[in-house]
Length: 405
Image 1 (tube, rainbow, N blue to C red):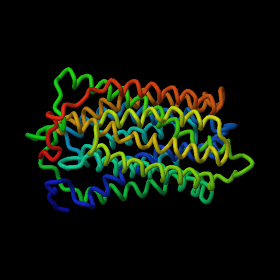
Image 2: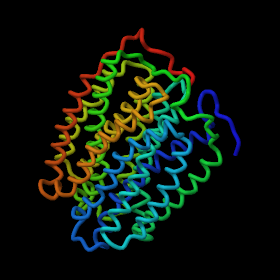
Image 3: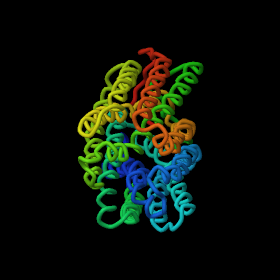
Image 4: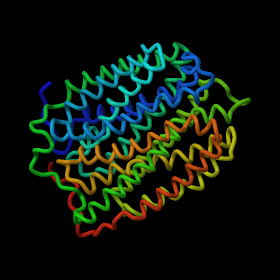
């Protein structure tokens, strides 16, 4: 389909598909975490904690693949990479459903993680090209991504119950392939790769020294944030299952409870995204970080419906903190190299935080969820200290966020 790019962004249909891509990215990575109890039985394990470490390859590749994906996005083209993302996610999800051994499952999940690495360094910079309100755009995109997490919790639980765990991968896989075909048809061809454009300034001009400091803080904050994100989103289904024993034990109902938590918590990203465009960046991020510490402490010692409420509030602030890292890239980095910078940041942060997924099962089995949540509270405190090092922004150096790129 031949179209032209809107000077202030892409067409509504393309922007919708870019947001759907974020939902697909997060949903597919969490299908396994939601279905792991059923899959553990199918693969001959005694409980979910024994199978969980076999998914670590997906999260390692989610981080390691971001660097080459970001480079290709800037130097080759973001549209091409997004088509590969959709088709690759769909095909690899179907491949996961076809596995018959733990080795095959591990490799297929790693392939899924490889394709999932494309979205963040490519899809988000593509979405915020030329927009006058990047914070709000990132907030809406974050909402879409976390609705994908909610959909994973709800749809996977229902599909596992009615059709089996393999269908929980196949059906979303077919939908992702269809999205890729639609994206290729609707998204206009790029006249030149982002790196070859002649303009596209950052919102805030920093000296090389302050820019290096901002990148270091951005990467470190993203690493600890992703540990919190990965631990909660990969562990919440099992946490609810454990603490609702004797109250609710149906997997589909647990999935519905988890989906409701993620849906409500996702709305926080809309609010935070708009706040990013309207108020000082550093104080807002500091408050969003520090408040997670007492909330995680409360969640560590609550049961059934008390846990449901405390976990809901925890996830509001965990999800609400997500837009900051992408907003930092828009704020400090020229659009011509945003995919590469995002790729570098994600490779370090997600590669490091994949440890959280690898350790989740063994950690919970060894020390229990209560002590694991106490460790997460400590990590939230560390994140606050890291954010404190973020450079202050001289107002005089703020440039127009609507600069053409």
